[in-house]
Length: 288
Image 1: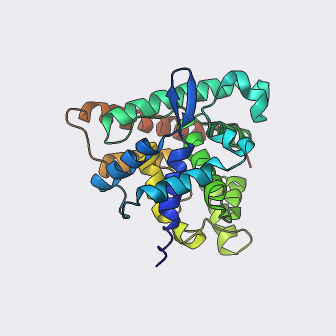
Image 2: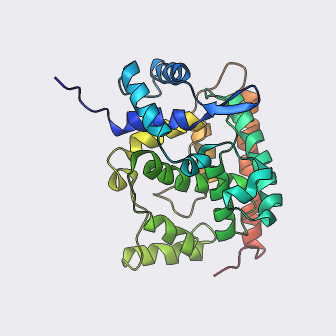
Image 3: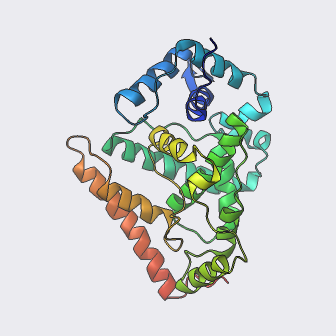
């Protein structure tokens, strides 16, 4: 009797791990099958992924499916290298912003992974960096790189669903959110909510409405990257960094002895929120 096909969430998990490059000497190669299997077992042992562990044959099958993806598509999963910006379709004028953003995020992820029960951070991929640049172009006045990272993370994940599973998701509500910028002021938020209520623009869909397994996949992605992402759907006026701070304060367990580090990260996020609030009071956010 033929075996039932694995859930899309498990297929995504296998292909996503395969897409991660690991360093062997001076080369970066796709994650080997033994490492994929070990990471999937660890995720289930710790309870961070709830689905059953697939067999070795299934892991090999879907890893090979990823290997058959055209090289130009797999390039997006490679670690970002500044000297290859031209190959990635990124303008050289973006160098200053992207290098600074990369440094900031890698340091932030390192401190976060050290404080919490999360895997070590990975170098940013080409896909991530391209979305950082796109978000920066859409919101050039956003000075908090944490928000740029978290906004880009959501678009990146949707692109990965299409890339790894062939599942296209309607993101018009997310695009409308960026058009109206509800986080920038109470007035902007009021305009946005009114436009959504009057059905003049699409609202932010719930993950389960966009794709039946997306909520489960989002949980897996948070485990894989170490940082919860996404736009706060029930509070569109709240920035993603504020959601991250609340998540850290109330939900995430600590490694023994790292409470002080976690508290420093939370205070840093609060300071950025205070700077944004003061900027609004003094007229720093005047875009319409």
